[in-house]
Image (tube, rainbow, N blue to C red; front, top):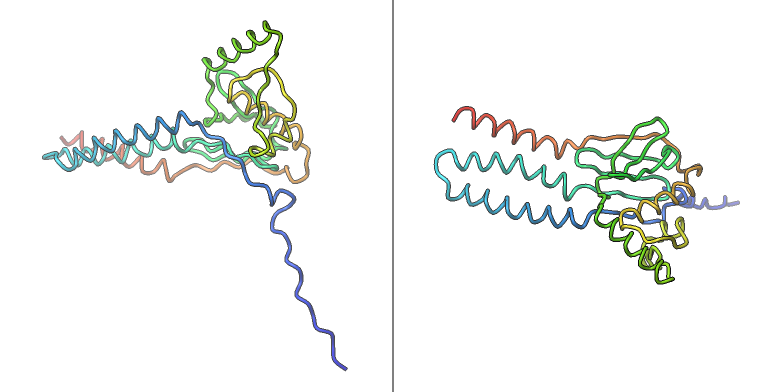
Length: 229
């Protein structure tokens, strides 16, 4: 008598229900454009000083590059808000904050956008800058539309973009500035996912030493060169 062959166990999914969802990323297009421009100017001036400079000038230029480039990257290219079904990840200039939806008490908008945890901690969303000019422009558009008897809507993204936020924030509302619309969608998602079992956990904060360390080293080197000069 032969024993039946044992079949290998079926592979188990590595992630719960959100495994098939691609994380959405929100970044400031103005910040990225400004950062690229600043890096181009700093790089051009710094490399020119290194190549053509005399005496201590090349060393000062190298120290300045080591100090300035990480700071420009940190404040312009690095910030992002990454949204998934279970958590909100906030990448600020020098920190990465992971906020499960169940730990977020509120998402506030004033002169800045911020997430407030149940413990009372506040984290600013650097990638979603507040534009008072955009708010005033949106208010003028809403007033004009109301006067014409045709209220405008937020114009949320179509089927090809932002599926998760679109499902959570379904429906149209008054005209809003772009980052305010994103915050509206995040609030709808918080309301929808805040009590979900997979959206619980602890808030974690990690410092971006890969950005802070080069900037600190450049600052120290620059200070030493200026002091001994």
